[in-house]
Amino acid sequence: QNPLVLEPVPVAGGATSQPASSMKPACPASTSPLNWLADLTSGNVNKENKEKQPTMPILKNEIKCLPPLPPLSKSSTVLHTFNSTILTPVSNNNSGFLRNLLNSSAGKTENGLKNTPKILDDIFASLVQNKTSSDFSKRPQGLTIKPSILGFDTPHYWLCDNRLLCLQDPNNKSNWNVFRECWKQGQPVMVSGVHHKLNSELWKPESFRKEFGNQEVDLVNCRTNEIITGATVGDFWDGFEDVPNRLKNEKEPMVLKLKDWPPGEDFRDMMPSRFDDLMANIPLPEYTRRDGKLNLASRLPNYFVRPDLGPKMYNAYGLITPEDRKYGTTNLHLDVSDAANVMVYVGIPKGQCDQEEEVLKTIQDGDSDELTIKRFIEGKEKPGALWHIYAAKDTEKIREFLKKVSEEQGQENPADHDPIHDQSWYLDRSLRKRLHQEYGVQGWAIVQFLGDVVFIPAGAPHQVHNLYSCIKVAEDFVSPEHVKHCFWLTQEFRYLSQTHTNHEDKLQVKNVIYHAVKDAVAMLKASESSFGKP
Image 1 (tube, rainbow, N blue to C red):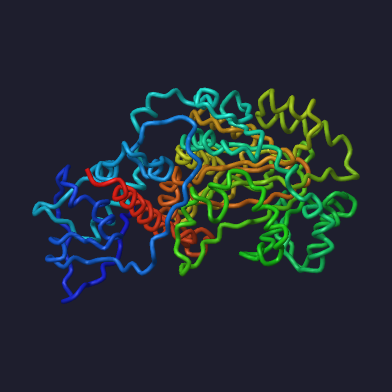
Image 2: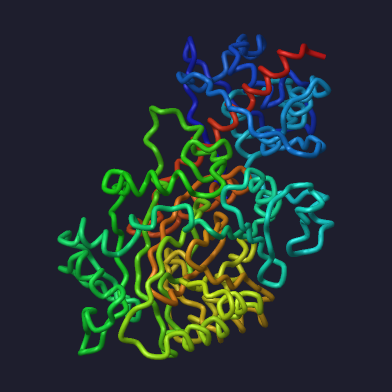
């Protein structure tokens, strides 16, 4: 992996310091990296460093104060992590917390001094290093958190053989407390019932057809991945719930999806009322809103270009026939940021026979558990899409498996291409079975019904197969729990071909990490000062 590098800015006299070649395992508080950053944000840089004239980053923006979160209903031990810095309120008993935190990121040069670039490298490295805590290593695999034990009044149930948390009240104030216990283990989460909060009239196909029907757009044939140009938005919506009205290929109705619509960052400008409706009702706003306290992207100063975190729309017909089970609406891929995907509309098209029976067979063929099947049969809810999500830690195994299958099929594996990032595979039942048997990789099979929100962790490979015609809207965010995946994926994307859509660092993850750490340390410094130094 490539190390993080912050370009030095020479100070008076043009002198710069060189990083030391050897490191010792401990250092006094005055030379620890986070201590230096705390001093920097308060304007008190170490005098010895001033005498040595180290290089220093230019910090022109004011520190943003983090607004307080609702207190936890039960007290908990303060963990010396960046996440607990944001989540845990400071009390009178924690007056020495900042110094303990700062001392924990130890390290100094042989002469007792650290230069600024190396200190910042250590701060970044301490955030993105992939360490497993001793407590976590002792836990059995799968979901072991019991929300009732934590004392949170949060309606929920479990799917995927008790491996998937499903929150039932999207507006419950305690959702984020329970959510993060599963989220920090790298597991997806589902929230149901959001469609009851949304303005349903805004999300109907008729409203999109009426407002945007004349816009030219590219369509994608989900069966062949062929791009169809010269079509209009109206052409797509005309066949959304009416099979005979769909565009045809050799007299056969095509299964289509809208490609990149609305384009780029146009969602808020093109659809302001829908944007406001979504942002007012999206679950877990602490994470998902642009100004969410636990969305690290909110820490970027206003003078930065905002990373494109959505919302983005995913509009596609359903793949209903038995032959369609080998195709994906969205092939296997992974994203550099976390995402919340909202099912805002499910359309059951006219002109297709035995739809309900075929959808049930697809759900069963997709490895869904009994509770999910029961939800479909007895609950009379509208199923929209079948998801398969895999843990980020299994990415390399999946990559090796797909390369192996490619070689078996006589395909090439160019060095600057990747079977996951290229989105060239959909794992059907036979491939999923082989993946489990040969590599021990088991994912989550999730059926997303109308009003369900699927939370996908950064770096988690996933694929989607629409059961019926669906309108989905996704909002991306950067959580403290998964920022390390955001960083490593950004580094990984650099080795893709220059023409690859993921080659560029659109997330600005280094800037996000830097400003989040700076603001957190400044808050701790201010809190410690208010209680008096030990």
